[in-house]
Image 1: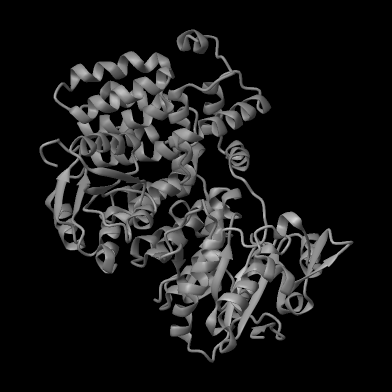
Image 2: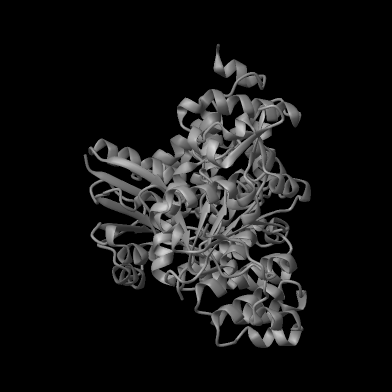
Length: 289
Length: 111
Length: 208
């Protein structure tokens, strides 16, 4: 196809190479996510889809809206479309590994074994993340028998918190769990189609309702050693993201750590934290002073 | 192959230096600001950091200062590039821990 | 099992309790408190008081701690508006790179207010300030951005300012600007980076 001719009529059935790089570099600057050439199909498809939904005939006019829209709404929509958001047990496992292999040991070195370690997992969503943290601690952290750990998990949605407390999951949620773990900590229900996590674990996590944007609600959250906030901030606008980073900063003890999602980075959010790179993962640390 | 990390918030600056350095046989990684530079640079055996002074979130001086505090990055040479020309900035750069300082845009022979 | 559930209700730290009873005057006083956290929290809470703009700007000038500077900038950004913009612009001349960059980011979040000043900044005597204005344009969500960048090309003689503008135009330039951008190659014949930037910008603007 003759690209020049296609562009002259604002052909909306394909994205040219130049349009792709223009978009890619903009998206990279805003989110830190960089799409390689091998992601062309993935990206182009979603761009064309957003173009259609926003009634833009050409990439050029769509990009103009994207770039100059003060509210940043379309960018948020686009981020939604470009990121895969699903939850299941042991998702982004390398961070759980990092927790038990590196981060917790550092925290114990700081606090001593007699102090309780406090972990905040937010958003809890349907509970896969906080329960994954608990399972990893029980199964993979040698010091779990000597050190007390408290897990608090929060969400803005009370319906979802209720599901957390019930702890019932389908095949998809548990597909990444080793069979012996599944058997040890879950009981099949509803004729074997679902699994319920055992009562001890359900009772060991404190599920709370919190709206991160509300300072009155977040103020009591203090003295945490480790925070998991994965795949939430990417869906916030710039100001809300910064504000959340602030909330977490105050929630952490000096020297405390926070994990963000796989494609998220403090480099696009806040300069408050120190970058700490461990063998399995990057974490962000609240400075000591 | 020698590895270089280019840190600059302007995309064409990164692209230009990438072309230059790749033609000289370097393997190039890019970062858009100082925080990303630390994420990509720690523990990765870079031979040189090419750092812009003025970047959002974490500027070049802070980046270099922090690099000198991270054991894995202490020994990596840093070349700072900037649009500013006065001696005060050069001094700041060396005090922060840079090894070289050049004024943007980099001419090929300077590198 | 050493997974422990807390039985005590989330406790509010004593410092935080004090915060809830602070009023405007109390907050202003705490902007110069000894403790970094207190200054940071005071700045954050002053975001709710538009009348705090002058006192925040003054405190910002004197503040050495980066995390407190950031909190003050965030508060000013949250308040927004013309007084904030006119108050922040002089700080573009600061010696501190971190403060300048913070100011650039804050200004970039206020497109309507900044629009009234951008031409002036693009014509500032100091070439660095002109470059910072172009840095603001990299982030600014205002539809006149391409037009403003083009105006830089027409009158500017400083190579670094021109180069910065071209870099921005690679993202937001429009087809009718191509000729002007290409002409830079003749105006600045011996500048390989600029030529590279021009070629990149033109290629992306043409979109093929």
